[in-house]
Length: 457
Image (cartoon, rainbow, N blue to C red; front, top):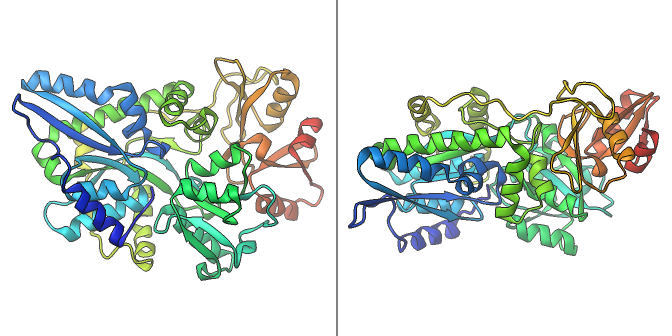
């Protein structure tokens, strides 16, 4: 999802000019298809990491090649950000790429500016309708309690990314101009290291970095992007010239993406483990985002509310100087999905019977998931109180316990949450803002630590 601009993008284009041409035929009739992806941007895994690991695209192309009497070869290129994928696409060295919403828009704008057929957004990978894929974290010992406390502080982000957009808009909502912080333009891995080392006061980033640093014990969540209530998404973009020349290959890719989406939604824990193995990320962090009732929802359709959100993102990108102009309707191409006629896949949900409270798990706003060390499967929890009881009674080492925020619904680690007791109810919140807002409207409620909530369950 990260974005680079100016000289960095130009340099990437020049570098791309020396690369092998994509979708080219070799002397033996082999057609190479080049796919650019970001392995650690785990909301694109159905078009990248998981898709590659499962071999679905290669399987689809084998079937296509058999019908056409030719051989296809897939070349996977892994990048840290969306910008070099865009640069390679402009140089006609990548045929299909996946990236986050802001980089997608910049991709379309750059391609339209360059002239020619341009690029097209053809499908969605992962999304969150409230924006919880982006958030702000601070060191565990930080004195900051709200975003307003970051005034004058050093904040690491990737300028021009959706995470940066969330930061700027959230600061403005809190009455702080983005010029009132010391913004450090850094790649996520660099920012995460700087946060741990004390080089910055906060990290504003996208999935999976906030969850990773919190799970590691290096940070706590200061701001949940869901508080903005603006959708964030990731998607698949193609070179339109490639799509026109080889529509059957694009159809095969979208069908393979649908295969990966179905696998992730039907076997979420197995999919999380595969992605963790491929990326080096903790499986517990991957499952936080990609598991059932996860922060990300995986589906391919170009949903109207997601496309509307892209339209609202364009003015911000223009204001920060990374996008000049974009014909959004031209960039969005629904025809490829229509031709692929993909089956409807239901998102992964926590279901079953809570083994501790002994009742069915039916409400996604309350349902949690517990993962104990040594268990081959997770167990469902009907509500936060039942989840705490399960942890308390198990006697097993806990790998992770996931529970939705009582206000935003954002799935988070139960032991990293802030808790409130209101009568007999035990309610989890991801941030202090959430706790204070609830306490203000419920005078009889009281805040609890995770340990106190466990004891009270």
